[in-house]
Length: 117
Image (cartoon, rainbow, N blue to C red):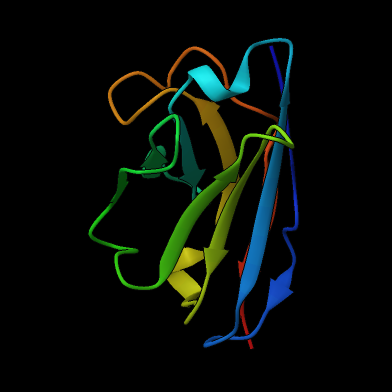
């Protein structure tokens, strides 16, 4: 299983970013996928997950209404559109295989998002 994230960057508060994650070594379309993050000095926090076909989306309260998860199973790619970014969104963002309750086994190396003026 390999998961490779990209798209992290330095952005000003109120700005937007789109993260991507490409999966390989497993049948991508058969798995729920999640985004999780780790802020400096803090533990891992689950952010969002998406069902196999993209029909069901769930979000942490801290990002609801600002972040949108999506996937393209033809490209084995997971996305996270992040709008209205806040300094507290600063973190290393990982994609992970699995749902909110099952993402722990596999995740990528992460992509850094820094929200600062």
